[in-house]
Length: 500
Image (cartoon, rainbow, N blue to C red; front, side):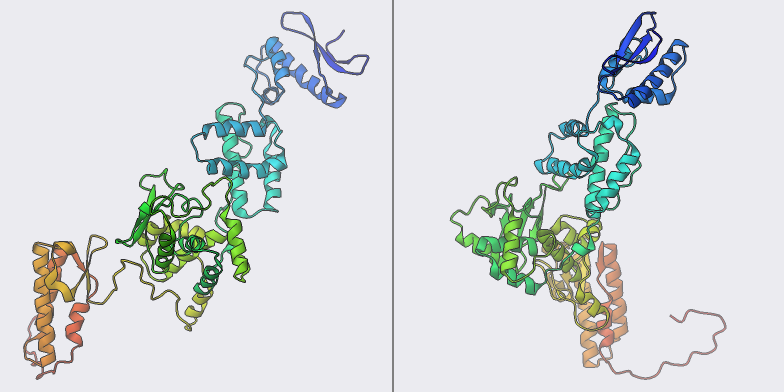
């Protein structure tokens, strides 16, 4: 019988061939139609011909061998047509399970996000599809189909997750290349159409619709404290509340893997204080968790109840209910002029992330730009934020604020002592001297007092202290002291000289 493709009495295909030892062999192609069997036999013949001639097979043939089922690869390896061990064939679901085994130490929410994001593409490609049979074209079609039904951020997350799963398979040498390596994930920025600003009027309506004090606090912590719900709501305990220091500590499971990001301190804002006190007074225990509801993050879902509360307030539920509360607080604080580094520390994300996911342009911004209306929150003064005046002097260390009215009281409590404190007192003396002489119309030269004050402030800068503005000199200049006489005429100047 000649080598090549044959069929038995039941029309089942098989290949008749001679191995490298000269022994006649039969290779059955079970469950394969005539067309596929003919294609298989053609590639098999090319492989056998190259091996017998002592040549390296065509790379396309080797790639074909690597994508065969394990049982076919075992036959080829047994008869010496391929030298390497057969590749283990995994489906997409099995490859994901392998990948998740590396994430055993990750949080349940992280593993759940990987499953959810990858499943979107697996439903299109088929979870039982062999990873060795995936092509870039098939993956591109799956991503295009996903883009027509899902938001850009969801598509981006799905592509990134599946890319990581397939890259792990490449590292295990289960496949030679990642078919999704060159497919762009796209942007994961939040969709502007899903942003919503929960102003004070809406917030008051929702607070009135809350069924109890605990739910009012849940809303307040998200709206005014800017915490993440439920990941930062559940671990909050009464021991984290520091009433005298007007702040509370928020453990953050989302950022705890980063150095110095296990948690953050948040001010007890004036809107949040009564809500927190109400729950504290009603609580029979002054220790333990602040919120007793929704302790099981796997099964409890505060979002559903929150949507019902919004509807009870007569408001159409906005997209991403809790996320937009946090975004509202971020936008509100920055519009109120609170420095970015403080907002970043209080809310637990950087300005770059805020621009990408949280900050919003609201209706009042357009009215303000048109010269009508006023910015909401412009009078917002968070706990611990000192009022600013033009007399304010600040030292280089952040958070230390000094006032010229209290320059005689400078000392260790203000963070300034020693030589710097004496400079401050000297500046206060000259400031008062110049101001009093200007008011009384005395002939004391107020300009010299101002020059002396500038010398004092220059000395302060040498001590590491900077002025907030030049207001200290302008105070002297703004007082309308009478002008006496005229400046004498300068004459007989034979060389250029400074007039200062």
